[in-house]
Length: 277
Figure (cartoon, one colour):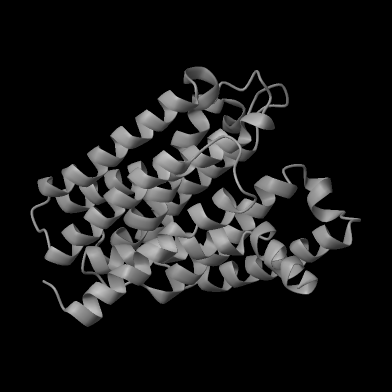
């Protein structure tokens, strides 16, 4: 049991779980927008997510990322380097349109993790801003990248799906923001610290309503998409209700981050079993 617990914690700490969540959302986009998803792009996103998240969590300072004494962090470093190799391999197969958008995403990630000047702050230092940057990066990565890679442009439905993905990720980040109240610097003006836990949850509930109802603005609405968005609407609403400051150990880091994976599983079930159109 202890071995399983260590493996499970490593799975979370090495950012494999969050990478699977991002990976799942890419395929959700393929199904929802009815496009074929480039396998090299999905693997690039999966491996790149591991590298980016581990770098932000453990190695913002280069010497700490390269010179690791702790054996546990050394293993995470090995996973990061292997993931980096996987990302580089798949990067060679991406087209020019994809790379143009990746440059923008890379710039946002760099701004989030590193200050541009020694005396400056990174975007993570601005508590009220960081969640919007994270949600924007996730939305662009999981919606715009796969669609732009396949079609080379955007449509109204793609814009709406991108907005929905942005709102979806914002709502998922709220439990993390509330959990981190105990650990964050009081000077960090996160949403729960600025507006309180209850008001932040109410904002999340409102965003959930917006997330669902803007589906009706799309030109092409499939029955299974509408049903799936309705399930997410109820699920995210329940998430806001049960979220509290003192959370179970894996509530946010596993269960909340598993929601994108569950989204893909349910969507595949609707597509392959019920054959709704």
